Image (tube, rainbow, N blue to C red):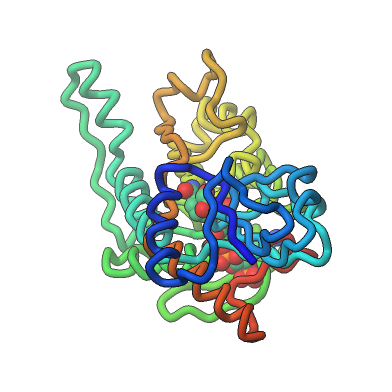
Length: 308
Ligand code: NAP
Ligand code: GLV
């Protein structure tokens, strides 16, 4: 029995230290040192190929190194393997910090002031009180709910949208496609924290932008595949939207010359909002492996039918 880690090798060395100290009976390999392929029962990876997955006859658990699992391609994972997504405090605090920064930056018109500074112009906008700014989160899972909790002390009018109904104190909760337009109509700042599935691909499209209040702002922290890029450019250039913060795009990185790089109303970051932290993540994975070995139910198993 062994575990193979197939991701960033430098961070993998931290994982290896934790496993050596806390599970010395479980051999831990960092790709490309796989040890005996037939002994690998646990795999930690971002985007393993179908061919590689099928070369591991004893594989039991596939741990996504990230919270999202769309990059894995669930249909290519053998049915005998359970897929577990990453839920660990390092990702949560990263997303909370980034989302709070982005919402506050959009609320206080930071992109406008960057443009004004570059043009050496003392050009101010009215300050809108937080209570008059409506912030909506798409996706009320681990990350969406943590972001709502962090935004709560600022006094924004908070709302959220999910697939199944939720009740969150201080948040107007909407669920399902019937409630989607009603939700969008009250989002001055919209944050996407959805998983990328067949149901959510290109959800950030022209129809959605038309349902938002004029001049709304967008933060995409989900996946690049959520966004229709042409629709965003059209919405920004027409004034339907006033600014966007994009941490994810498709492809990553964007090609040289892509209009997002230089767009004055877009802030682009290289998929760094919530980065898996090796110490906390290794311990979470180890706890799930222990549960597996004891025959107990696992945490954070992906529902393959739902895709997340
Ligand atoms: P999660 O706990 O699984 O939550 C997903 C939420 O999305 C749930 O509330 C779910 O609704 C909702 N949802 C799913 N499909 C939907 C649909 N068709 N319509 C409406 N709501 C839908 O996931 P998480 O841990 O919060 O992570 C969310 C995503 O964030 C990840 O999948 C990943 O893509 C992204 N992410 C990005 C970064 C980054 O650095 N940018 C880092 C980590 C994660 P229910 O509650 O009803 O199931
Ligand atoms: C990062 O994007 C993740 O899914 O954790």
